Amino acid sequence: MSTIDPPDFDRRDRFADARVPTVRSVKLRRWMNNALGFYLPATIIALVMAFPLFWMLSLALKTNSQIFSYPPRLLETPLRWEHFVEIWSDPRMNIGIQTWNTLVYATVRTFMQVLLSAMAAFVLARYHFRGRNMIFYLVLATVMIPHEVMLVPLYLMVKAVPLAGGNDIWGTGGSGWLDTKAGLILPGILSGYSIFFLRQFFLTIPREVEEAARIDGCSEFAIFWRIAIPMSLPALTALGIFSFQFAWSDYTWPLVISTSEESRTLQLGLAMFSSHDGTDWAMLLTGAAISTLPLIALFVLLQRFIVTGINFGVGK
Image (cartoon, rainbow, N blue to C red):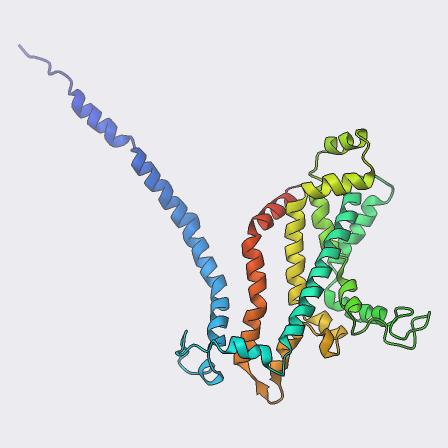
């Protein structure tokens, strides 16, 4: 008489365990996906972006003959750290005054641009009036105009400022705001892109907050200054960083407007290392490294505000 073998439950459980992934394997697979899908490409991109900065610093620590040696070497010994000391007394570039001029130019221009753009953006985002959309479209149209196209009109306007620089009431007879801090800063305090960027952020503020403030007796300016500005600090910070970086690195407008040593910016001073006699590449790259360090420090310290501000600004 035949007998039926009892089921092998242990064998069935072993096959079930083999099919169900363990917690460790799931974590390992997730780590591999993150490493290969994000961290590895991000690391490669970061190294590619950082290499020019490292190469610039490497060249700044070499002599001119070592810079053009073949095959090129990443580092030479001894490292010429004295270049970062000698540049402060080099007669070709008054780096102390030029750094101060650049700091004043970038700081004042950034502050005025962010403040005025916030005012205009708040009005375009929170108030309804006849012609609002047309004004906004005109602001957007200015973004499409290249900066180089406006150089000559801006130059003529700055030169013809009435009662400035020896000009009469009709703006003739003198130099106006040419070669002055006002002529350097004021033409750049309005930006169509800044107004557009902040308007997109102000649109995300709940209208109930604004209405509650009016019920409590806040004036229109108090709503802007005490409610809208604190709520938009991430966007204002991100815009301020971008504006400061653009002003700090600006070369074209200071070249057009500045003629004396007292009004030159850092970027114009770097050009003094290049002349008809040749280019002092070691000192030029040393100055470029010094001028880049403040921007790198600014981005590193405030990168959280940059990401938050951009996300809110483009989210509407």
